[in-house]
Length: 260
Ligand SMILES: NC(=O)c1ccc[n+]([C@@H]2O[C@H](COP(=O)([O-])OP(=O)(O)OC[C@H]3O[C@@H](n4cnc5c(N)ncnc54)[C@H](OP(=O)(O)O)[C@@H]3O)[C@@H](O)[C@H]2O)c1
Image 1 (tube, rainbow, N blue to C red):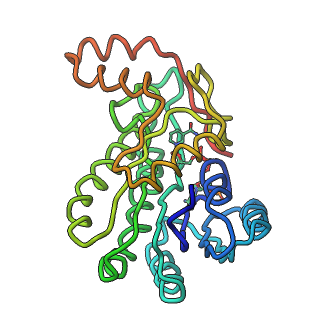
Image 2: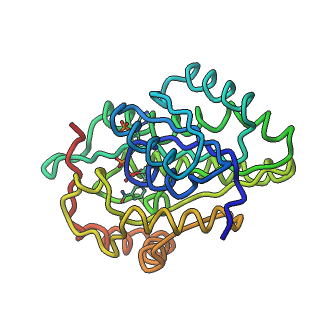
Image 3: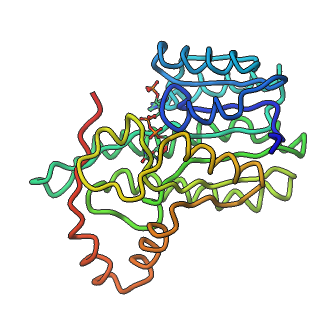
């Protein structure tokens, strides 16, 4: 299918899903704005995309830096006119197995990157996108947005918040001709998953996950959630009485090792 988007911004493009999405959208007559923090890996994504004929502007940027994000995004938009904005950058952590919680600092870090970082990505471009009355925003949440999982309280809080934020915006943006896609993936292979210690059922490659996400975005889907057994499983845990959901999830032994 021919990508309907010619100007695409992706955060977290230096790794995993973001890098795979950048490569998937790259092509002749496509301008890409790629953001990440690791210069070597971001440059590698940029080179791969240029090799496919795309024009690339890559920038080292921490999504928690409110004004740097706004300046770079608005400047890129003035030059190109963004029609797809993908807020994908994310981080994950979890408590030690013998500790009841993960601590305020770790929770704040995840909420800062996954929720506030996505908001810092989306908000600056909404006025321009809405005034052009075209384009789409996609935020990468997680199936963890459907039900809190005992192994990652801060991560679940950040992704549930992101899903709620994006779904609240969606009808407002649609009135202005701008679409919103909320992406809720299950497990896919990436440096983030390399830190997971436990079962990762239905694990996909990041390329396969990117193909599913791109197809959904290009078709204008409001929500992309996969794989369906995990989505339904977590929706069941959410809808069932809390005692049943808790009893099911309590037995899921899982640990997320901290990022280096
Ligand atoms: N992997 C999974 O199974 C899974 C499942 C559901 C949802 N997700 C979500 O999918 C998204 C992509 O995850 P992934 O698995 O591809 O992870 P990944 O390989 O660890 O990549 C994360 C990306 O986010 C960037 N990032 C992290 N903190 C940042 C910050 N403060 N400022 C700017 N960029 C930052 C990283 O940049 P640098 O590396 O340059 O620092 C990297 O490019 C995340 O939102 C994640 O929560 C992942």
